Image (tube, rainbow, N blue to C red; front, side, top):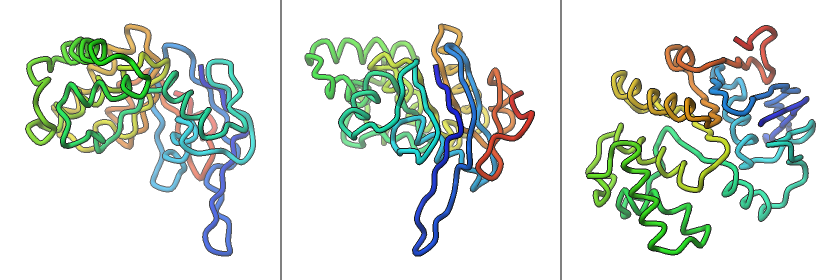
Length: 224
């Protein structure tokens, strides 16, 4: 599903260039649940942005579901994000003035799905994550765990092929983290491919495999 070879990425820092990724090789098969770990500055956020087509890479090869991601313009990258990818963030990224159902339905709005179908799909997904009774509530009326489950429902709305989760339990207490991870594992059990960036060993342990980054490279022997 995901195949990277020799991916490099640098950023300009004044007159200097900072190389963040130095030749990353990794693959994620369809239906896998993979954790990406690494210390601060190891490149894991940059890597996730490249996987999510939010940032371009300088060199190497990225195949997503067999399609080459080289040289995408922003319009095509946005199309592929809508068609292929769902995102879950540590900070939830919900729109505060929209209800849970409206937040979940948002990706379908951008796909020009009719309002009635958007609402139906949003309610189905909220039921899937155990929050149908909260469909009309605003994010400010929900706990952190509830907001993250809404965010997961939103990530599923457009029926993506891959979900990319950036520290999905980072803002949650341990009990709520377990609930959210159980939901992600349940989705994986149904065939969803998930990549989870985390700094928490217990979250990584709950995944099927862990890829560890160090200084912009995958650690040798770190495919657990």
